[in-house]
Image (cartoon, rainbow, N blue to C red; front, side, top):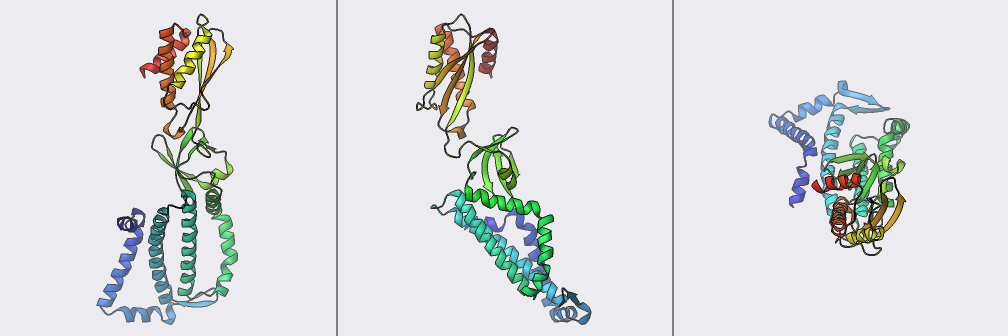
Length: 318
């Protein structure tokens, strides 16, 4: 019940609520001063009759229709939010199917209300057909992006290429968790806590990396230089041992270390190891393994080249 009340008082509906309350207050004042009938007669007079698309409409029909539509769509917005929360509690559906079902029911709800609005205004479907061409042009021009984002959102929910909770990489340094897939945009939360609203169309037309599409596992890669004076086989074993000892490191497959090249001032190794859950981050395991390698090298007489020593020391101090 508390969630329903919160949905009713959602900040985005305060303007609609104020408008509805103003309508109710105006109706109460007109009723109190016995002005409802005089106002209706004035609005239904010939002077207040208009011709629209071959039909005649009085000002009373237009005003009463607008009031009814405003109230209906305000109630519908609350019902849609409550419906979305109710579907979110169905444990048998995954998050993508929950969102897809909620959006389908919301579309059906608003379509029914749209047809009711036409009936309230006294517009027949035959008269409505007059506007279909202009409506198509309006969607094709003014609402092109809105339509594209809406269709893209539906496709995303059906394909499940991205879904709420996924860790995605959009390039240009933008990485974060999908928190919500809406009709027009998808909400992405970055590691800094910033929320970015990304048009759904971008997920269809751009390359998107999904770290958690089929698995949460991720490979960490580190390049480490070793002095030419050191025992290279020992250095390799120590680096593998440092990765194996980390609690987040996967043992299937286990860590691997390869000699990559003989550089001008150092022998360069590359160390790979896997972590089971990339959503917890890779910076922590990388830091821990590097510090463990530093300690093991010091204890076993393996030296870094001078430049690498400065880099690792700086990381240790941080």
